[in-house]
Figure 1 (cartoon, rainbow, N blue to C red):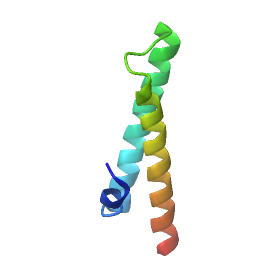
Figure 2 (figure 1 turned 180 degrees about the vertical axis):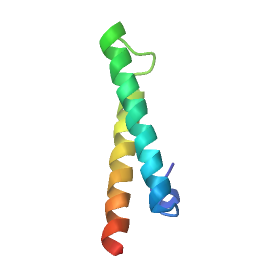
Figure 3 (figure 1 turned 90 degrees about the horizontal axis):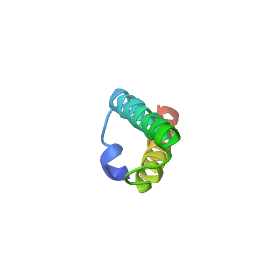
Figure 4 (figure 1 turned 60 degrees about the vertical axis):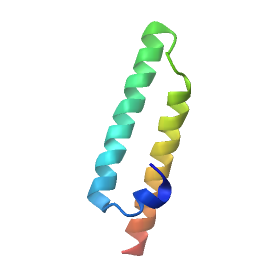
Amino acid sequence: MKAHELRDLTLTELEARLKDERDALQNLRFTKSVTGQLENPARLRNHRREVARLVTIIKEKSSAE
């Protein structure tokens, strides 16, 4: 999801998405540690970026209130 689409969401929706992204990232890291490889290693980077994007937008919304 793009940043301008995320800014339209409410704070609770953003926090729920952040939890989902962190869970997905943790699962990918676990899979990598167990098997030693991933089907698509770029997914790690994409999830890390999405988490950072969500944290930034949540902080922006919190400070605006």
